[in-house]
Amino acid sequence: KLMVNVFEHGNTDFGYPTCENLHDGRGYTCGSVGFTTGTNDAYHVVEEYHKIRPGNPLDKYRHELKRLSNLSWESNGRGSVKNLKGFPQAWKKTTCQEPEFVALQDHTAENMYYKPALKIAKKVGIRSELGRAIFY
Image 1: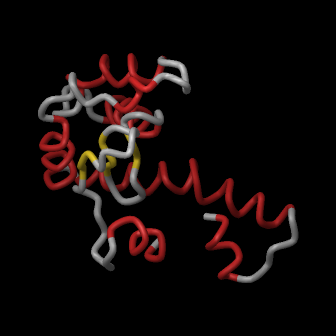
Image 2: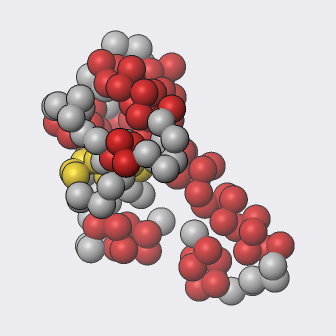
């Protein structure tokens, strides 16, 4: 987890509250592992958090995140942040004020990225810690 954080944020401070437009066509990049609004994983985090805490500061972005997630992968509109005004501030506020949201980011990263990476690494015979980290 720390290694990913260093590559994602350039330091050892976990970037849970980070949310910014890197202008890479993926919309806002957010949180500890770089969930993005243009690739469905930020939408997944927001939806899951709504189940835990309805009415949270991110709820008002659910409709737009769903719309972006339903665009085709070939669409250059997936990276749009036009209708997400205030989203970075809401992400940061939610992270800083609601510990459950930090826990959800960890849970999502583990289940969406870490466990599948370990499974694939094992399948192809990778056994070293560094090798498994590379898959992650």
